[in-house]
Length: 394
Image (cartoon, rainbow, N blue to C red):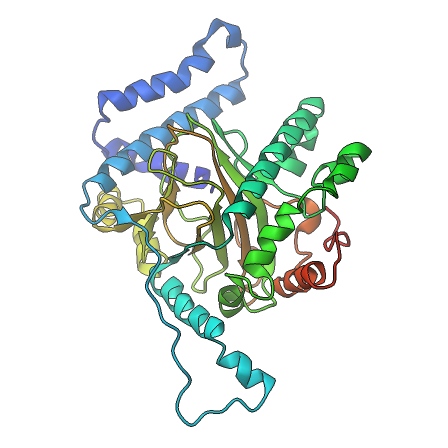
């Protein structure tokens, strides 16, 4: 997610950091080739300022990488071994409510929610099937091609397709449509739209496996945000080889209550060289936030040195769910295109602006809750509705 907001903190204290290694400077120089090339000698001052900002962010990100690599605690983020607690003795199953209360899936979700609240993140293996992951990845890459064509025709349409990550090198947040056929459904391409009814509805299929009646994440999300939680993001995070490491950041300003819970779902295996996300466990707290935003370079470096950092190398179909206040960063991608399905739901107890605009198509902003989503998915899976989100303006 976006780390730009934390650039000013770096600029204020950056002089306190040790000199970056020569290899890091070479990376910066490589980034600068575009702006120094004669072909681009007429680039605007705004473009040059943007490049300077990107270079400063990369220098800071590489320094953070050095600090975290000195920490011997860094390990792979693994799914916890949990067991659903059995019902207390003497309790019965007299009605539908009690049956749900003692549903093993519901009980497991309670245990998972405890992990999220304590650690700030949890890994869920096999959140969707390999087949659905393959289909969704193919669909997203097709949507990316359509978005590129449309924004080349009309740059002002960019807001409809791209979210908070758009200009950064080899990285984008592609905002997805919930309509069958995706972008073709409203671009007037009748041939593509008709063909879409002969293909799997991959976005709905993936959401069904996670948030439908027996979904792998449904009960966990209901525990964290209730059915009234608002759909806040719906996108794909795509990085290509050459994508730089991000600065460590939370996704939004600190709030005493968790405002937002985010999903990253791997649509292919994510190896260590494909830019997996690093999560700094238990840094979603007030104490960590104070240190991180204090402006004291030494304190901030000590926070990173002492952090329990976990690397989310994932198998296809695995997911991580995290509290958006948690410190994290995407690593550099040096290997192959990495596609993550990304969505989030906000906590209805947190009112007003979150201080962070999620990647979601404008028509979906504030339009759908988790309950609305599960009802639509039920209509799709059980009722045979081939386009269950058609009532929502994309």
